[in-house]
Length: 404
Image 1 (cartoon, one colour):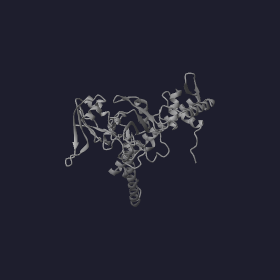
Image 2: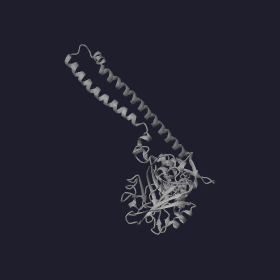
Image 3: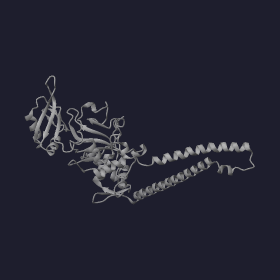
Image 4: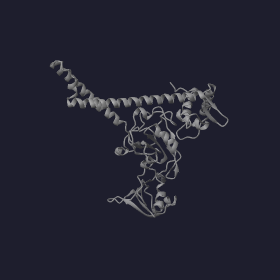
């Protein structure tokens, strides 16, 4: 059976939820709303700014549908507003959530208070004084021993509950980022139930992002630092045949709030001199089993990690972290026809003047290894040359990395 065609009524709920999660909680610009809703409904391609006519028509009919039901209104300035009825629903829901939070806080305080009482009871029983005072003198010796045995059993159970309470309270503290240094880019853990929880500016709870217009020399640590250490998985987009890095990637962040913050605060910011583009990248049918990928960092053409590793090794290897004041590059995957003149002209294309070149050869055969080292006069020229990583030189994508 084919996939059911999207109807205007299917966009009604996303439109309402997106307006509720807007900055003022009640209105948005029509074009901005349309883009957010179509991305959420998977009707707009990742990173695309072009919306096809059918999707525009579908959105327009959905808006008319909601206007007819008096749930929204569209003014002459192109601003879509929630009706008073819908806004009151939002206020009611917020109030209910607040009451739930208050109840939860009361239960937590009561639990802590009960735990304290249980500790005092255990301490008293350990002294063996207060229990003896509570036992009536007229009771028989056999019954007294039986009651003491039962009390000891209860005390042991109570102590276990107190210990469990202490552990639960400790779990409420956030993880220390420094303690997770062993895991690459994992700076905090989030309960699975809260990872995709809808939030402001992210009503569908999406945690995968598409990043575009990235610098060709960007590295995993640099990109993760720019996104405030929230990346848990990263997938570089490269050409299947040449391995050329396209300047884009898919990333998974810790939770929906991190994704919303990236969209609001980091989208359009400068990374190594380039304004990066960020869009939500919701799951498509069939991708659930392959995303997030098994490895924390992969490269290649497909989003999925079928086959494991780095897409069969065909992807472009990202550059390492640049050493301070670096003036030397490693160059690899070179054509055997390369020479000093050819490499000099190649780097002069970005105004990076070479100081010296050293080619590498096999000791036994004397054959060229297809790699070498290039020295530049200053670190600025070295940085310009590094931007050519993955570019074609004599029919082969050159591999460039920092060297010391």
